[in-house]
Length: 143
Image 1: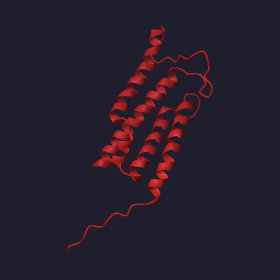
Image 2: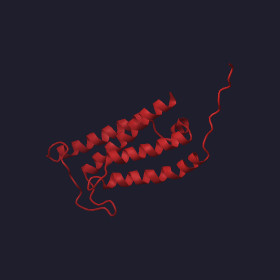
Image 3: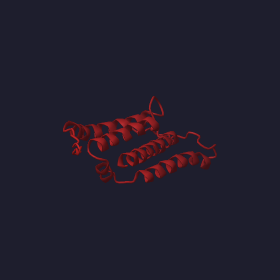
């Protein structure tokens, strides 16, 4: 039997929904990142939400479209995340404190609250998780 390969029917709704949902999910991931060192949330869960938003776009449109949309390679994001977390741990050493001790600025910033090394550490974890998840899932999606 000589069968023709079936054509995949692509959804019309999913790419449109992904274009509207992606910015909202990215904003929500930043909210989770910023509130994480005081309440539930943080860099890990914020990074997972951001990576999920980006992968939703890759599933809806294509992995190549997501790669062209990103201004960076996921591998470089992993390196920046690790470096940021390491720097947040080294800052207290210069103040005569143990590695990874939390230090905060004395003045509060409106909306953000007190800024300190725990937030910098969470930012590093956020970047690391986004980079690692995108790196793995884009590699699997392209194969």
